[in-house]
Image 1 (tube, rainbow, N blue to C red):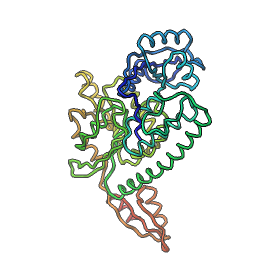
Image 2 (tube, rainbow, N blue to C red):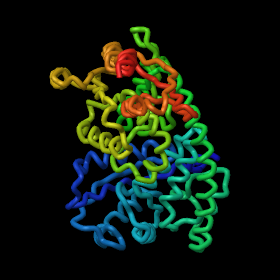
Image 3 (cartoon, rainbow, N blue to C red):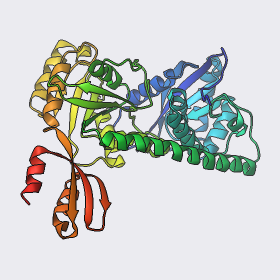
Image 4 (spheres, helix red, strand yellow):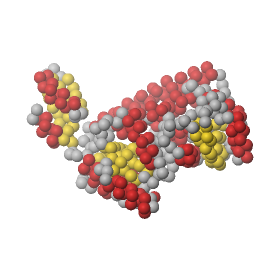
Length: 427
């Protein structure tokens, strides 16, 4: 199924609003948050952003989010600009959405809904499409403010931007539940296939290096530079969604597998984090993670913290080394570049480069080789039941690839370095 928003040749005129809540503990400046929201909207080719604004909120109004005076003020601007769609950069309850749409006479979409639409537009693999659709159903399950007849269409979006009017809640709920069950069954099959591929990769003694980072940090550009691949790399949020893996030969002659994953973003909808967990497990399986940062962005530190929080919530193992790659040096002015290079020089876990120009990439490849340590190889072992201590030693260090219990003990396939094998032999 194709889940792009179907507007034909018509462009939807959009207005972006960032509600700046007075007691919001967030780290971002409202102007930067608004700019990011506008970039999100610009990632949808069907949308034309004709205006944007920050609206200060001392407290949210339960039924309308904004006060009556502000609603009337915004309505006048929307009418003058002939706006079709309002994008609220933040959470909006179903009641608030319904009331504001009625007051303004336009369709309304919150941040989560917009990100889901973008993901639907970007997903290319079967797994990606299923994951996005499942996340959308999870999001809309308690809202039920739109009809769900689009679930049976072979075109169109999720119905957030377009679609018919409301239907009976019970029939809507049944349609959602039936679709969720069907999607989960299909996704289980796809995930099993991915696990088979992952298991096959484990048998190949090539370490996995994963690129992670905030969306638009330049991961795909760096991926292309390191692999010679042609992955889509555009100045657009979520330009790529589905993970891509390629083999890379380092200057030392060592082979690795490089993985490019979906970019993160602040306030990433939890439905998407849950739905894309199987995809993001490529990061969790990595031997080394390269955290790519857009060092030229005014909020690069805040973006980096968002990435760390998401990686932590996914369960990235503490023993997996993470190197920060400060990208886009070419976008810095000379003074800022010198300052950035000086700051990076005193941190052993930081590398600086420009994926666009290629400056610093060769050094990155050398550092990756050094961090991966010794090469690993497979070894088949037959341990008796009396050798439980040696078996436990293997498991404690995560060296067991496969294990089968026999009548005499255990048949184990270990993946280890020459040094680890020697330590085992000395036990």
